[in-house]
Image 1 (spheres, each protein chain N blue to C red):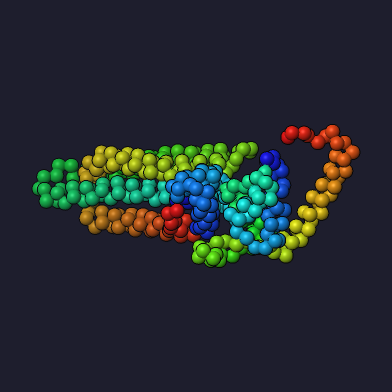
Image 2: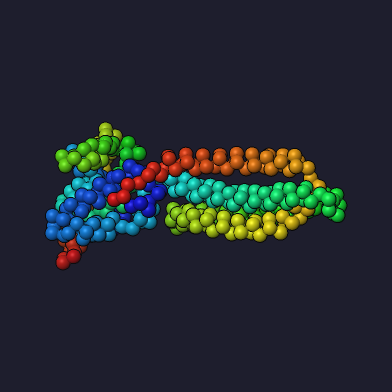
Length: 238
Length: 116
């Protein structure tokens, strides 16, 4: 019964009560508690069937579960990007410090600094846009698929939300790896650019970037907490 | 056993009729209908509770959590005024169909299946 996040706690309590009644009745018929529990559970049907039946009364709950997972995926991806970008800035800062101490030998000082900075920005932008576009197309495709006429719409929505949960984790890991690899190669160029950047410029950049990211991150976490509190209160084990 | 269509059509009037005997909880409703139908109608919880919740939404019935004699909390359902009215309409319609069918089958006794 723990696997029924689409149900409100009151419905779960009612089902739990029903299960206990069934177990009691079966036990008076001579079954052991364990046997009675298995029979009662079998009669109740599997979690998916129950979720679909209950989902018919509360279709908005199915949507909320889907939105919840989409948001969770977004936060995971944002976190991966944030960690990757922070680590690259950190490496750049360290490289800058090293370069400052080795100031006596800087043959590349000032040469092509703007081009390097621009190249890095364009690259980030292009990669970001491609990822966003792929994401939008996939999501749009899923919505069209889910809402196509005929068949069991709820079942399709449930499949999407289940797919989202695995997809969110997988895509976050994948994106994290891509960004780490990207930042590792980008860091060399960035470190070079940072040699000609003042420490305060770098500091300001890092500060504003972090502020924006933390704000969007917190907003998402808050929204998820709100949805969780509203629709999936902690469940007791039956 | 009833067909899917028959179950869909009869669930609401059956729930209303059982609840008009007095308030009751889901598990007992299933048992009551099973006993009355000699095991012909056995509802599952996956089917009954969504119907009960829908009927509550439609204001036909109301529910209340209360502790039973055993001390366990149960959700008791009872009929509202709108439910009683709806039951009256259902009763009239089912009686009409029943009367017609009975008349027809009396005139054509060969239609009644034997050994079914």
